Image 1 (cartoon, rainbow, N blue to C red):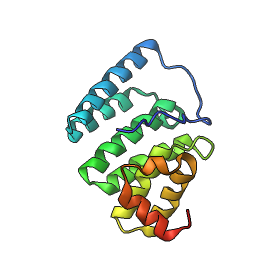
Image 2: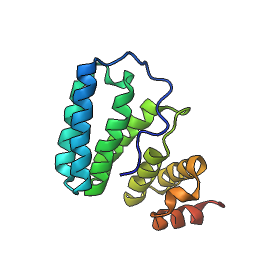
Image 3: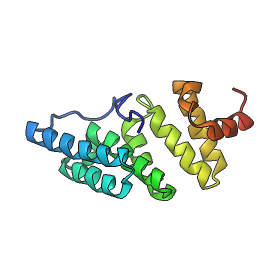
Length: 154
């Protein structure tokens, strides 16, 4: 899984989680990452959601919600459930905001829209990811880079 924690949100309220909450979130997220590494995406979703359940309301005020939502979205993406993946990536994108846009989230959103034949949205997200991270973000994503380069001059 790509590093979803880079470009952390800048516009999120940052009250501190308690040390106990942080330890539990890290533990569950680690178990989710282990499941992702083993391609057990359904189990990964369960662990990431357990971590999300620890975050106090309103969850949108917490940085951890951004990267955990992206992790759940990535698991759904790997399962081919692009509609559900979009819901989590859009939530993550909202939390990261325009100033802290996350190239991985934008890439995955673009890929989801691509697979759902929503070409304009795919182009917008992929182009935004490209502008933030450059061509190297697409090193293992040739089909998406080819799609993007057929729509815009790179």
